[in-house]
Length: 284
Image (tube, rainbow, N blue to C red; front, side, top):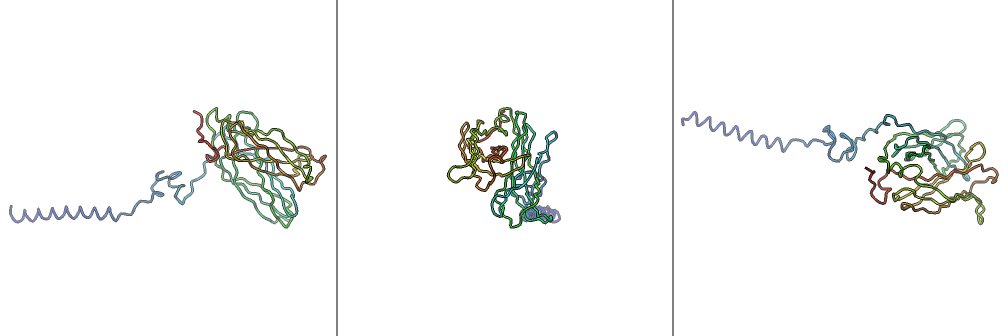
């Protein structure tokens, strides 16, 4: 091997070593790709580069084709003591298997001049109607809202719908507006304290065990005018089980003859996995 060949061999070896160590340096110094910006749904994201640990929130799913919108039947308010008011809205869902897993609501109330006095916000869910043929109806109630100025008007808005379907014929029959029945309804004056009391007994008609059940009671006068609205809740209700409940109306100051009818509604969140005491799996 002559001197030229020896030098060429040394040059090739050095070039290979240079490339090898250069590649190692590039790999070590290459910035780690952000999983929230790689164009893929990975690393526990809810969607592509959104949700989960990513700061970017995922866009809310649109209402599927053929699924009817939730209707706001009405909203109103009633005085419930000195400077205290109750706000109530009535909603309807006319979808057999589709409900609302989560929706934001806002009661905004105004004085007689149209000035905003305040706002009460929260989240609700809405059950599907099932196969009964009747729309699922539900009340949203905010109790004991303090306002030093008497409200003259209330505006109720829904936003940020998250739609979800109850799948399977068995589950549609078990996870709808009618699964929590109320028996033995009574609305009368409580003997000791002399105020109105609503009572009844819930019954879980489904095959599932629920962690909590919500109960709303709305009192109507003539022409369906809301006289009062109250709510309560019950916990740990097994399938087929139920509990007695009592809802006081201490500030309802009307004669019994002024009460036209009383509506009771019991609901539970069928889209919250944490609301099931046993794991919920839709029927196949």
